[in-house]
Length: 197
Figure 1 (spheres, one colour):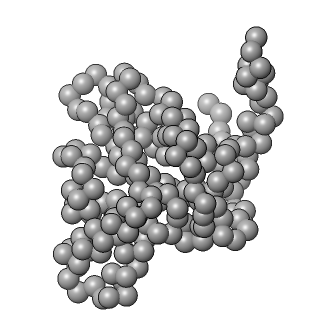
Figure 2 (cartoon, one colour):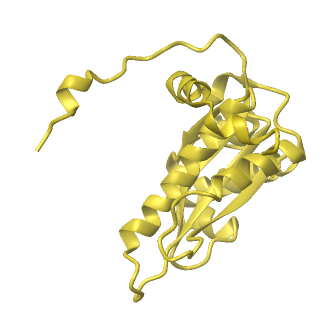
């Protein structure tokens, strides 16, 4: 038995991780972000989600460094073309949207239709990718936030980010460090959401 095997059985650590995970506001993030190796680990963990049919119905687009500014220019231009009446303040906000965190990863859902595997399951798999990224980032000492916002649904943005017909953005996952202490939010009353058949 190798030394890594016992770690797989430390359920208390795993449960502690899951029970303490919380999102941090993208607006309040700071650096540093994950290194290339750390980001690769986060994405590799995310790619291990349930995937009926082994379809890999998702892919990743990474925005870091100067790419975040280029993405901001795309967002501002796309917004201006979609809403010509928007003001300079809003355009400036869009230019800086991806600068809120050191690393932003777009999770692209790419379902296949007319196959035996339901579209709904493929979409759920992309959602599981986003959630697993949040957990992996938390496990590595980062904070992460899964957002969509208008730029996940805008046709011009999707085209300019290289999405193909039928692809959608399941979310943008912002990863960094918290710029302020994280606050615990209200959690559901389990008695109200659990029933037995």
